[in-house]
Length: 151
Ligand code: 4NP
Image (cartoon, rainbow, N blue to C red):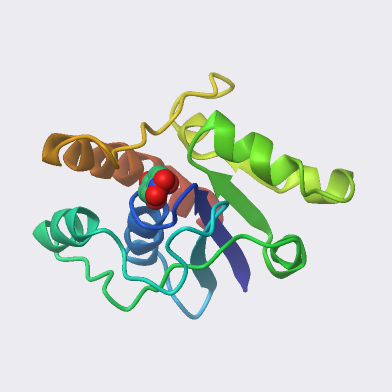
């Protein structure tokens, strides 16, 4: 079983989409996917309605997800930790205890644009189009993540 964690700031916009999209591309008996936020503003809540809506547009249901905060234990519980942006990466790396923890942390868009450290833009304060753009970026990145898992 490979265990993959998607991480953003709020765990209501980007990482719930990344979780739902990757789950739709992998065999759930082989790959466990979850998501978390570095912040605690929305713990226990549903994903943002705009993320729910854009996922639904592509036949992905993310309404079973509930927001949780990233914790140090996640370094033990997951093999790969995909962060959405450079700020998430700093926040997660600040909690790393050793190089093994640090080596688990990857920028998700580096799957598409290796070593460029491109951010998935935070759509929270933007409009609906932001969520569509985020969906498309994450969908392309998750195609590659899923391919890598099958190698
Ligand atoms: P996310 O977006 O990190 O993609 O879930 C955000 C959601 C909420 C907040 C920030 C970012 N917030 O500050 O409440």
